[in-house]
Every structure is written in structure tokens, then in C-alpha cells.
Image (cartoon, rainbow, N blue to C red; front, top):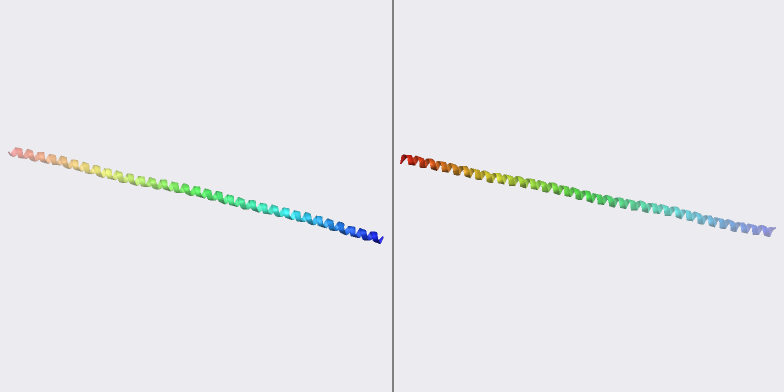
Length: 123
């Protein structure tokens, strides 16, 4: 009876030790699995953040390029407008000079004709 009791006791200890060992392995596996899931989730979150940052960066670059392009267009339009104004002013100035010269020329012709007419009358 004592021997049997001793054998049963030893067997119980081995069974308990085996059960505890199996449980420990399952617990460790479960902990590793949970850790893996957290690590994967962290990596996915990090990747998402990098992707979002990259998308925002690309969008910022496109927006900046669009603003620069728009500014360039406005500047070019302003330059063209200023140039047009200068050209128009120059044309008006040239026309004014030609008109004034023509008026002076006509006046000169009338004055000369009048002088000749007066001279003819006196002669």
C-alpha cells in the first residue's frame, strides 16, 4: 500500500508537472501571439502614418506647384499688361508727334501761302 501510494504520488507529481508544463507553453504561446498582434498593429499604424505623411507631402508639393504656377501666370499677365500700357502710351506719343508735325506743316504752308499772297499783292 505504501509502495502503491508512493508510486501514485510520484505519478501525480509527474502528471501535475506535465500539465503545468503544457499550460506554461500555451500561456507563453498566447502571450507571444498577443505580442505579435500588437507589433503587427503597431507596424501597420506606423506604415499608415508614413503613407499618410507621404500623401500629404505629395499633395503639398502639388498645391505649392499649383500656387507657383498661378502666381507665375498672374505675374506674366501683369507684365504683359504693363507692357501693353507702355506700348499703347508709346504709340499714342508717336501719333501725337506725327499729328503735331502735320499740323505745324499745314500751318507753315498756310503762312507761306499767305506771305506769298501778300507779297504778290504789293508787287
